[in-house]
Amino acid sequence: MRILVVGGGISGITAAVEVAEVGHEVTLIEKNPYLGGMVARMNRYFPKLCPPSCGLEINFKRIQRNKRIRVYTLAEVERISGRAGDLEQIRKPSQNPPLAEKIEDKGGFPDRPLDVTIRLNPRHVNEKCTACGQCAEACSLEIPNELNYGMDKIKAAYLPHEMAFPMRYVLDPRILGTDDAHRCAQACAYQAIDLSMQPKRLEIQVDSIVWATGWQPYDATRLDNLGFGRYPNVITNVMMERLAAPNGPTGGRIARPSDGKAALSVAFVQCAGSRDTNHLPYCSAVCCLASLKQTTYLREQNPDSRVRIFYIDVRAPGRLEEFYAKVKNDEKVKLTKGKVARITEDPATRDPVVEAEDIVSGERVRVRVDLAVLATGMAPTPLKSQMPMEVRCDENGFIASDLSETGIYPVGCVRRPSDVASSVREATAAALKAIQSGARK
Image (cartoon, rainbow, N blue to C red; front, side, top):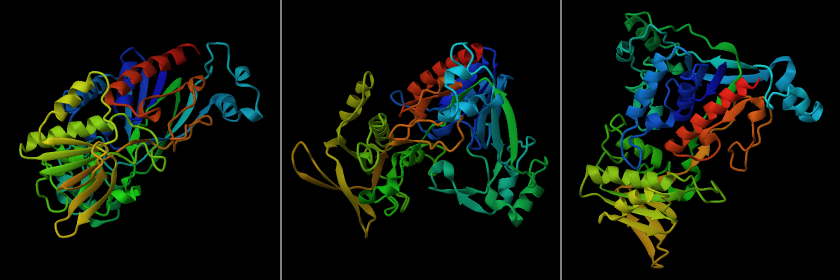
């Protein structure tokens, strides 16, 4: 049995290793040059506050040791179809006989493999790479570091991060045609730099697909009243996570982007664009806990630091209530119930000034801080790739269709906002469904 997993984040990795370890062939593709997705960008998990690196390392080893898994990074699905028009006819049910007439009576699943076209974008570094870093040393061109949301710069010949899988350098397309590209090639003692690489297409047949393309942070520049993009010391929660990470732009030191000074006072603005009919009308479920977690980063790093959290409701279900209570009981952490109306900036100091109404006291609150962190919500990754049928999404862009009849199983944050633990559990379930789908054909 052959199964395709689209998306190399924690959901996709989990599904791939679960399928392979029970004896089936897996092709795992990821659009980025490394596996790990958003988890690879995290500093710690809540509530235990352990780093994600250990979990990723274990899963990477499981992938390396399992010959049934083929991994393609910088890869995207271009097209999915069925043989002899099976799924092409599902795509346009109004122009073809009913679905039941197109599928043999074997549990309601397509009786033929799915034909998938995958685009492999050039890395310009081949399998001979030993990650020695000589190409980066020879390169002078610098580009914004996507891993750190552009908060620092890296060489255009780069290793995505120190735990990257595959452990192989990448040449950014902007380097092509420059003297730097030739210097990189000359510096490599292993002939790993291939400037002639071109996009390729891979045609495969699979019995089922796990769709795990994940989520992206909501675009905070759309929140005009909160100053993101205009004031350097107003950042998002995902940027805060990178600031606190040891492999982040500041080596783990939580500092102001404007001047590099330590951030001793921080305001967390909850529901920044969430639960708002003009932006994200839903709750992403994890933002409150993410801000509570990031509060612990600051408090551990500097005992004199102070935190102000502006919230609508603090949502910490089940056993996570204890984590919330622990942070709340810190005397230097203050929670204010009230939605932030706007953030301005003191032009002399570049300090963000946060304005809100305290719902409990009825008073207007105006707080000057070193750093303001916007807890933006989780938005689904757009469905750019071609699906074998019209996929019905809900009003927020999450997949709402039941695709089981096509042998495609969406999992994780393409279906709803989810934390890591929930995504892992759902990925295991999707792996089992994908296996059952193929077994019933």
